[in-house]
Image (tube, rainbow, N blue to C red; front, side):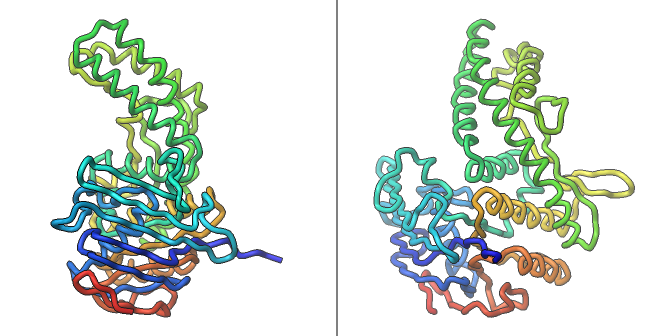
Length: 385
């Protein structure tokens, strides 16, 4: 007998003084809901609050202070998490709550009523992926956008990655401080061992993820674009001899790159090679040649690639957690032509079988679950079911 995979669900959401919501208490159907409202009504803010319970920061990149409702001292977000098919969240969470106070910029997180030993232990308690029109920045924006995407996906789904990237960033900060102060090479080199060790682990994780994700990215991009070939590849700042290097191989390459760049680094006062300079190459075939979508892709191609990236992220959640993710769709069809929208919908129907919470300015022709989701109205921070 085939057992259906467990699907994560948001069961309840409580907001206090978050964005334009003074008070909001909602209970969500297990299949999901379509939230309809004008621009500025709070649709994206609602999805932002839901995803905040996954990563404890805004998916829009806003600092916590900007999430506090105007004139208030802080905000509170609480989510009750359930599952279809048995079990609860990845970490056994059935409730995640976050409070933030402007004074002192204090953030408190509780999972099942108790603070986690480390904040990283509570990350990914839900298992959600958010699709947004702003995702085009993942393709058209600077490399920092794609590194942030990598860091979130791997931190939530790959044990050991979060610790490695955190250690790398701390050592990098110290090494850059030495470079800025004009320290002698021996003092700078004192940080190289730790930087190489942590950085090599980060590079190995990233290379393995990219190699695993590339076929799924290509398949989904082709399905949406009616056969146009595209490719995803890891683009490290340190030249690697293998597509998926071992940690030892990555460490050897990183160590050599640091040695070669030291003179320039001392002149510029900053570390010039390492995972903090990595990128993901998103490539499309044009005229018999591969071209960067960032530089040569049309708006439609870039949005197609962004959707394919998010679907790869959803696949990463399934592979790592053995469960269907919650899908948050923020007016995702707004800037796509009818053909691409229809093909994306077909992919979503085929692949994303978990709870779906979507927003739109009006009831859409392109709605998952064949339009069966209940429609709620949102206006001025109030939701009517």
